Length: 383
Image (cartoon, rainbow, N blue to C red):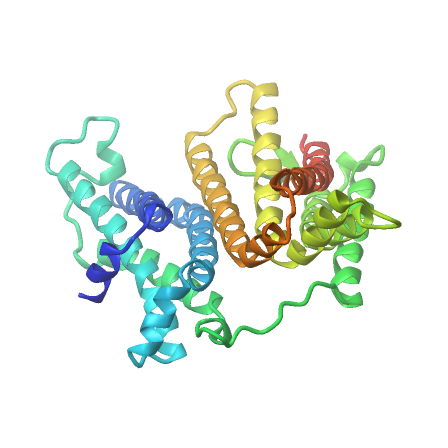
């Protein structure tokens, strides 16, 4: 009943976030049920069944990531909701549970619709191409689809509950957000990037192709060496972790010396937002780099494309984009008081728009550098 009353007060962003969560949960549930149908149609292929379930982990992780970002944005985007719950006697733990329950409910609805469609297709409706995917004509254990479907809302709910700090769920209890990065926070990604680049160079040296056994990559991406794969993974993680510090340094660079009001607003704003904006942008950049590298390889090697990885890549990209949009909306709400104060003292609106445009240009430059390096290292390691 609480969630039904909550839905009556939804605005367009709230409804869009809820529908996107339900859609993502429905797609992941479709992957899980497809793995179940294929396992029933081919009971002798135990290794293939495990591989199909493992293919479901990346989209499940993407949905959990989006659920975490969306749940964290709720207290900032809807403070009046948190205030009302607090006035009604709800504590911080209960508020966090309610936010996680809202996310889990959306995933449950999407998963239930997918399960209904799965059962309808099994009722002698699926054609010859879909019959093995749904296990048509074979007995369906009742516990198997229910267990698989329950993974989606359970994972999303746990991720959402863990993402909302208790200190931020109650009005007036927000802690100041640090803007800098400690030496360890910078040394770790730099070390990973350097080690990964060194391993990549070792794997690309003349005659390295004959060393060791090649690793055959999934999704029709050919093969690579252990050093190349490990080097790319280390460098990709390092570059992703460096996204936040690079954004902060870029903001500091914009405001260095005797800046104009435009540079000062853009630089200080980017420095303040770097810690919270860096992680979703890093995930999005890494996903885009991997997808572009995969598409480039598929185009260069005709007939190597695979449908399932392409659909999963679209889902993961969609979740990453939705997470970035949710974080941007959260930051915009958090800086609304600052913008209103600047307008009250006579700041031209054109200056604020210019600062936003300059920050966007700076962020795009940083992401182009990190994403380009990640894609280049990935393309170099494929053969």
